[in-house]
Amino acid sequence: MRKVLSCNIKMHCSFIHLDKIFNFVASLSDSNLDIIYAVPYPYLQKASDMMKDHRNVSIFAQDISQYATGAHTGEVSAEMLEDLNISGTIIGHSERRISQKETNESLRMKVESAIKARLRIIFCVGESLNERERGETLGVIEHQLKAILPYLEKADILIAYEPVWAIGTGKVPTNKEVDEVSLFIKNSVFNFYPQKNIHILYGGSVNEENCEELTEVKTITGFLVGGCSTTQGIVHVGKTLEKS
Ligand code: PGA
Image 1 (cartoon, rainbow, N blue to C red):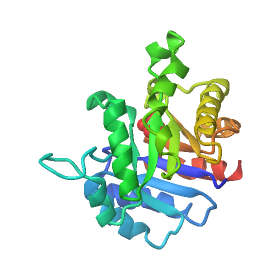
Image 2: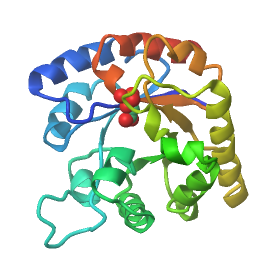
Image 3: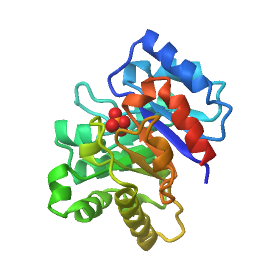
């Protein structure tokens, strides 16, 4: 499987910033990686224009509305992204699960909307520190996966395992911990839909220092990178992933 370097630049964006980031990305654009950059809505069009000659780079949104249309001030629907020719979106990032109180049901509706609009999906799952300490990690992941398992046949979904306690903290789980969860995700997908060979990404404080060790986890086929994705370090992360 071709490795996936997916990047979530969150709310760190301006036109100047975008120029800088895509200079880094351009140096990876002849690599054998599937590169995804998720940018804030106002920059989607500009980012797509900037990357249009780089065939292995796709631009994603960071979220979509659960609704197709209607009186939902400030929301952006999957169809709007389709209109803009945007290829995909992140769904279920823990920052949104927490700040927007997203539930499995609202995420399921988002997944359905994305599929209707033929968008690719990066679906994020992950446990909090309390949940891990209480030994509930796999139970939490199992519950979160329920929002997507019924759609696997129709959808182009990548699943990102992102422990909430590893995001933006500099803390990274051990390879054994990553492997345990990614294997659990792989088996859950297999039990539901044996024909589907799915990408499982790891996300949470991935950077140029820890990426090499993380590539030793053979059940993951890529990363979802936050902070490091707007720095020169992403080039090293990409090259390391490509070599692995
Ligand atoms: P981080 O973010 O790499 O800054 O920890 C990852 C993410 O939120 O997807």
